[in-house]
Length: 382
Ligand code: ADP
Ligand code: MG
Image 1 (cartoon, rainbow, N blue to C red):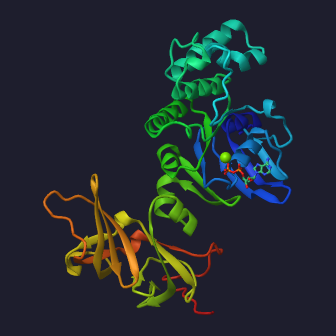
Image 2 (image 1 turned 45 degrees about the vertical axis):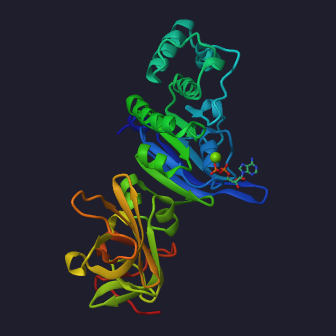
Image 3 (image 1 turned 135 degrees about the vertical axis):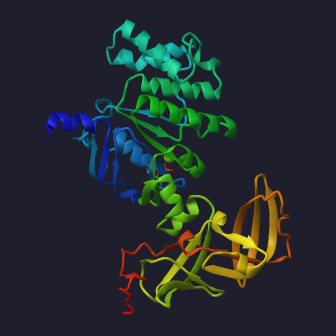
């Protein structure tokens, strides 16, 4: 492949290498690496203050890293000014010019770039169609609803045809229904344009709905990067397991029984699948509420782990029934699809609960992969 071809296939890719940002004694971003593919929808997800915006601003050039490098489309841009990078940014605050029309707002940047009038008009019309505001050219910015303002802000960002669009909580100030609608629309726009979107949100549902991949951030670091279903089903840390969806977490000690790894908690033993971890180590087992089964007898549950417990909560939630069941001192959250032909269990019922070894994950203490157990390389060295 020639370097020219390499460049073309790289267009819109972003690499960040060991970037760090310090403000006096605050470490906003703590030395992170991340590779974003060309045409990908990647979300930086994490709680407020974890460093999402700072990371995005370092990609855009609005902020200079204390350490590390940023590459866009294969070129090192760390020292390059924001307006020289082929990126556009969309913010939560719409920041439209109130005294200008929709068309003037959208074409302002193009005018600065020296684009001809005919070309500007053509691109504005296309952008307005893309954000589903055809014919809104002459409206005043003050005459728009919140959702329409955000569409205009999107149009203004994409009209410059950036390789990478950076979006910082763009839907956060919209009401829930409009936000959900706009999530689907933004995803459609991204697919139509085929450009790279780097999206920042603290809303896990939003991240799961829109992203190809999610990078979960916590305290200035990236905890885990992965495709949405993979992150949900195979979290590697307690933070990721609990931040993304609801889950059960049981703390216990890693042991081995008949060559199968188990986790012994205060109330029960859980048979788990093989994984990296040391015998005797304190770990957490996590299992999603929808993977926990409930029945009247243990025999009817065809899974490795079953116990008898007591229903302490039974709540109807639309298409599912939510239960809380105690087994010893542990509480299990359970979600089951409603069965039209069976009555849900009630508070006080004695029930059988359980889950398969493959439906749970072992979460260590973020230590590097240790000797694997359960595949004959068992170590009891500590
Ligand atoms: P997020 O977008 O995830 O909410 P930010 O990237 O905005 O987080 O901030 C990360 C941390 O850096 C926070 O502790 C924040 O207070 C701090 N921070 C961000 N910008 C500045 C700044 N300009 N000066 C000082 N501290 C800042
Ligand atoms: Mg932010």
